[in-house]
Length: 427
Image (tube, rainbow, N blue to C red; front, side, top):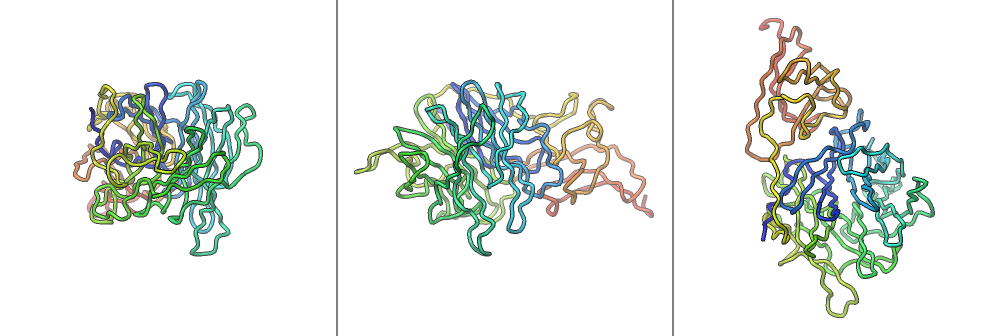
């Protein structure tokens, strides 16, 4: 039996949406203000994951706020077509959030992906459910800007039918679930089993009360009853656990019949402290069981408790190793490596050129690290607490307004950098 080592996707890989198509497994994760949008990984054993080309290679992220941009993609498949739904968060300060939701499709997971279809802007964390009768349904959390200051603006879970032929939402909008007492209900994903609809949501906010909860209904539009003993996955009462903030889950049934929830987690440096690696993707094994006196099954974590584990029993599948991402890049190719990202704007030879000088990445100056527009910054995810980074820079600045170097970047106000510049006295 194989072993899954958590996190399965280290570093910044939040909001995982897991999908099985035959013997292939895919996970899509948020990329926020980083380009290209939506990271997709592929596996055949749930243990080893390979990075694939991103889905959104032309999305406009310029001007988006820190931690805005692409939130909570949902990857599904139906009748030979991949569906990818996501939010492009344009603003998030104050009482409002501008959260347009879009849908793209592709026949192959590597693309090409269609042009985005606009869906709605009533909230974020959209997902698409393909019912057994052929109908398709959009879910998203509802952001209620009318909530009084200090009150929860998470207004419930909206449900509306999607017409794939017309490429638009049709019919009434229904608020099918307000959540549990944990509050801040988001990240809805819908599943169907034994005639019941199961709604998996994230609750508790995105910090140390984050969790995965379950509700079910005999009809798609409710009433949804909450699972006794909710949450399904939670670390709120276990502050010393190495995997914290466990939430935003999605469910997959493996070909051997076992089930797993892909979810995010944070690894704090100190107890309930900062998680500088960001929110990472983990996997927890779950199982269906029918409690005494119940009529249908609920989910529970395999083993004792509700917490994720650093090591999880893998499925009964043969292991399929993948090539690891190289620790060193010599920029020998004429295309940007898949594991590199830029801030808010697409890779373009006008500012990031791999062809003008062989085995070099030539960057043309842009705006400062505090800008939300046109920065000339190429980055890779930090995946471990202990690491070493170095680069070779060929740069001769002529003024103090010119600088280049190496940066450890979190957002426009949190970064450390080593740079070369010019000083009028020192040169």
